[in-house]
Length: 380
Ligand code: P1T
Image (cartoon, rainbow, N blue to C red; front, side):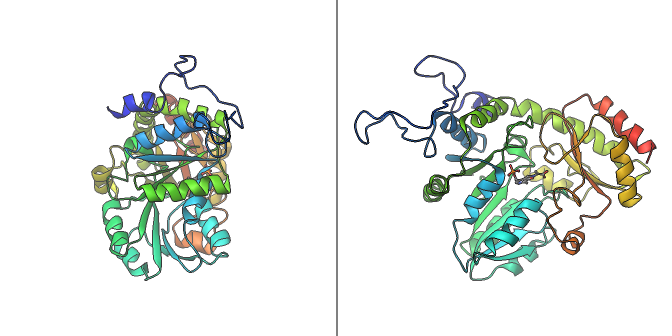
């Protein structure tokens, strides 16, 4: 079956007990056993819950994978992946990524003895150069947060596999509708389901999707042992979001193409970072490995921090807020928000300047969005 059909049906058969066509919220922490160890597949909701199970099947289906696991947040899913390794193991991460992932590596996992280095995502050789005989994992986002760089998944997978290391792709910005990293060679896909998958800015959630059974079992063991699982209500909201993922992503993209195009010609804007801009250096690769360009872009405003402050103060419709991927348009300031935990020197080295503004384009009417930007830019 095709994506739109699977998104509505996989994992979401009518409820066996009642016939309810929507998977119920199984708000129960525990399950009656007929005798010790004799039960209907569920014992305790940290280990398994029917609403979460439905979500996990749906998540796997979206990525055309065998196994899905749901977590309490994107960061909890990321933590589960890093926890597969032990002291002395080495991880390479692409240098443009969510500030919280950087913080987790730098301030949590380094302390536990993981070796971490960063590769320049603009240069494939930089990944090759960073590999050591202790490298167990390469972690990339593509498109990256916040500069929307595109990394060749197939080529980085080859670099990882040559050394028997795993490739993880954080697929949050693309969503499974526009990009499926597993068929391109990735071993693990991670999502912050908080974003496009749930799609309405009303939950925090995360996911891991894999094909390899051993990897699945190791991650499932971790999920149950460490316990950062989502509650059934949040799983239900994520499932509800998944049903409209395809239509939302098409709308996000249509609006993003329109607005990124508009801003790229604006006199007060110096750079627009959007993989869907034909003039951008990432366009050809994005077309090759993605089915669309998604709804995120960033731009640099002439005039630095002061100009950015004036833009935010005068902008209507767009909320100044962290996060992304919801139906409503958000605008954010990576240097002071999502990437504030990165030391200034590192941040500037990576191109996250004081002029950089990030936009998560919602699915409002695009003319209204353009007019709001035009009006605020006129006052900058
Ligand atoms: O917020 P949480 O659900 O824990 O997900 C973390 C995360 C992981 N991966 C990527 C690519 C992300 O962008 C995020 C969270 N990002 C934001 C909150 C943000 O505004 O960029």
